[in-house]
Structures are given as C-alpha cells and as structure tokens.
Image 1 (cartoon, rainbow, N blue to C red):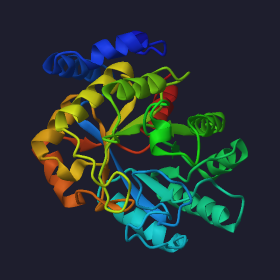
Image 2 (cartoon, helix red, strand yellow):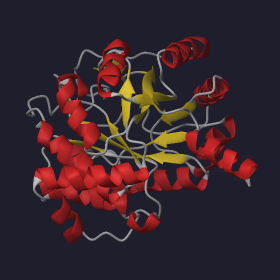
Image 3 (tube, helix red, strand yellow):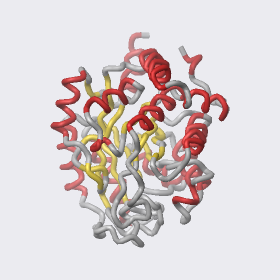
Length: 332
C-alpha cells in the first residue's frame, strides 16, 4: 500500500496535480484518502495560547508581534493548573490532541521552559496527545520536551522559501527547517504546514507543498491555514481566501502525502458546513476545535459536534498509531 508515498516529487508533477480540473483533483484526492485513512475519522485538536503577545518577531500576519498595534495585550505564561483545567474541558468536549502555543521567538533554558515541561507532563497524564508550538528549538530542548511526554511539535513553514522574506525578516527559512530537524532527532512527531492568503502566488503554494512533500519523512500532520486578516498587522487588508483555493490546497496535499494528517485550520469560522464538508471530502482529516485559535475566532465545540453528527464523522482516538502497533504486537 505504500507505493503512493513518495518523497521525490518534482515541481512539475506538483504543478500538474495542483492545476488539474477541480472535480478530478477532488476525486483523486478522495480516492487516496479512502485508501490510506478512515474517512469518517477526524482528529480533533484544541489550541491554547499559554503565553500571549509581546513577541519580538515581525510575522506580517500575526497579532501577537509586539511591533504591531492590534489590541492584543501581553499576558504572562499561564499557571499549570489553569492549563490542565482547559485541557480537561477540551478532552471532555471530544478533543484528543492538546496544543500549547507561546508567543516566543525561541525557547530559552529558563524557569518558564521548566514550567512548560511540567505542563506537558500534566496534559500527557490526562491521556491526550500533547503538542507545543514555542518557536525555535535546539536539539537538547526538543529532547527535554520528548522526555516530558511531548507527542508533536508544530513549526509551520508559512509559505515558499522565495516568498518568505516578504512575510518575515526576523528569522530565516533555514531556521525553521533546522528546528524541524531537531524535533525529528528527538523522536517527536512533526506538525508543519502553512498559510495561504499572504499575497503569495500559486507558484509559491506549489513550492511550499514541494518542500513539505520532499522532506526525508513527510510531516505527520500538515495544517492548511487561510489567513485571518487582523487589524493593525501589515496584511490587514488582504482579501479573504477563496474556498476553492483551500480545497485545491488540501486535495493536493492529500495526494502528495497520502498518510499524513491534513489539518483544516485557521479560516474555518468563515466557512459554511457545506464548504467544510468539501474540504473533508478532498482529504482533510483534522481540525482545531474550541472558541479560539491562539487569538483568532474559531467555531465552538457545539457547532463542530453538530457538524460531525450531520456528516457522520467521529473523533480519532488519541495515540491511535501507537495503540494499533501494540495491538499488532500482542496479536503476533
């Protein structure tokens, strides 16, 4: 079954897939999705901002950058008890993965990092997959997170390497790739995707997908975000991403990376249930649930539960691959 999983895609091949007639593209992606995944199963993740605002980076889309006046105040690192309470509520509502985000440029070896390690242990003990997005990481820091029970680390590429400097100047594309390498070396699964609607071209989107799909090992999950323009950021006047662009990105990602979780991420608030259903058909099998994605609005748990019931979807269990592996070992 592994014959469709390739890491040697060419730009030309990806361009041909991406530019295919839309219904043909969706059909091909849906067929591969059915072959490699349970199409009724969606991973439900919850993302909590554990340290908000005051970031020294200049990401043009981000309301948490200290240099932009977006009305987002600086909030100190949350207490462990608050985080665990939020994680428990998310678990009770159906989430099986809990992601903690901190508005840091990079992780520093200090008391705050020790507190995050403690949070990771606590969420892990709740039986949820723990994910973090904390900025750049050294290999040693990644190992400490792994030892604490971290399951996944999110570090998005955002866009193509060519368009990257138009969006961020305070760190390089290579910095991002280095962090992903450190995460892999520590044995933590990689969550890495990008954002569309940043003023990039279709060529940039194709190149970003090329970078992701030609990694030595595909990312375990690939979030596809639609820009949510925030007042006060340089991209506040960018136009809304067309739903067909999201469907095209998701379908192409599914064909290039058949076994990867493809996450329908930021921008869901503006999508109807019918539009989200198209994204699931095209290969999306993961969402963020809960009222907020860091600082931007997101559909509520109740709305998502109603959508799941309507579409016949069910949440993916936590640690599914590990549980399947253990079951197969016992059976053998």
